[in-house]
Amino acid sequence: MVTTLCVMTCMLATTQTGERPDWLLAPRLGRGQELVYGGTFVEESNGPGVRFNRTYRLETRVFSLDAQPQGHEVAVFTVLKQSGGRPEAITETTASSARLELARIDLQGRVTADPGVALSVPLEGPPSIEWGVFIEAPDQKKAGPEQSWEVREAGRPTRSWRVVGNEMVNGATCVKLVGAQQSEDWDRPRADRTAWRRRDTVWVAPRLGVACRVERVIERRDPARIEPTHKSVLLYDLQSSLQYPGQLFEDRRREIQQARSFSEAATALVANAGKYSAQIDELLARITSHFDRQPPTPYRDAIVLAKRRLEAAKRGEAPAAPPTSEETTPAPTVAELGKPAPDFVTPDFLSGQPVRLRNWTGRPVLLVFYTPSSPVLSDVLKYSQNISDAYKDYGVTVLGLAVSEDGERVRKQRDTMHVTFPILSGTGLLISYAVEATPKMILLDGNGIVRGHWTGWGAETAEMVTAELRHWLPRNEPMRGQPTSLKK
Image 1 (cartoon, one colour):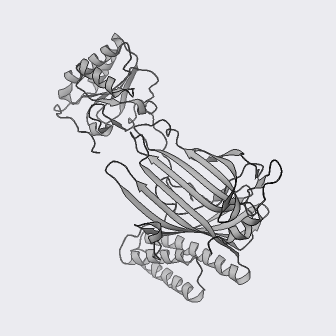
Image 2 (cartoon, one colour):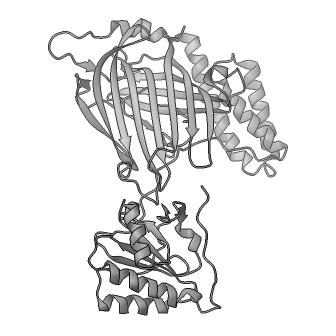
């Protein structure tokens, strides 16, 4: 029974009548209603020298604990089982992750949880808790064909949604929505940050306002790369929808409460297992008693994993903490005086090899951003070469950063002007190093701290750069050698 809810409810969906049909997207669940979703999560990496493929089977249950006019109280339970092979090769094995959380769903489909519980979809790896069955609808709660709206997400760019129209899913009519979200640098590659793009396609059962099917594709691109280097695809379908009355509802509600209680207690105890040995034994006894006295429900896996963590702690092992939060996108860094310079990985125009800034940690570095068409290019490169030659024995490194995609021109200029220091691609570093005009020189001390920056060129520029550089020369013995490029 793969599509129970789609068969029972999607067939009742509003069909397209008149010029402009509207679909009510707000969730409408009854108390004791349980939605069961099943599918797969597949991730692969095709980066330089790194190739892997991992597959998980995912099951997510949504259980309505209470339904009020202002919204719903639900429990969401996600179980992951890993397999190294193809999705169809996954067998019935022990869950590698089982996470249970409580949440509130308002009339627009907005999900909120207790403080400290992260709801963001991880950009890397499978979701330990999956909320994607709920869609935050526009303010008017109804949506028509081709309507679009935006949803804010803390710490990430705005996600846009668009109604595509009606589409059949497993023989039933559902409303198809497409969501898009991406990092600010996805369309403008940078050499110092990983860029990402997310696309969600959700087929919603209009009568219930929840998903019949969810597909999520996330692509990531490593620094200094043009094409995506990592990709994950999450796909799952609604398998059943049943409403549990009376004692059947109470059995599930009680097991959910006990699972939450046992998991929280286990987390507090295993952090210092040696000190709380007696309390661990007591909690294990309580879990065993619960297993003996209460009928099992699908939420028992959460208790089983808490029990395993306690048993591992008793054996002196260090069990992994249960997942409680997801990856967050780091805030962008911009070069500032007196602060560490943003690290980066960018190609060398001569060798084609990617080069990382931190390879030169421990020695002063002069970054020289320039444009090949600059009328002062000859003076800038001549001065930079003089600095490279004069202070080489003190470990000073000059890095040319050409703001250009014309590699042949950059290499020809390098040869013509007899430049010996590395010339790297600076195109992807303009934001992180606040390069609004070229030429621009940025001086880093031996600890990678920004000590000076100068935009434009003139006789006074050379004097200021040289004076500041001398101030940060190492006071010990001169350093020898240059770091090599990164291995592909």
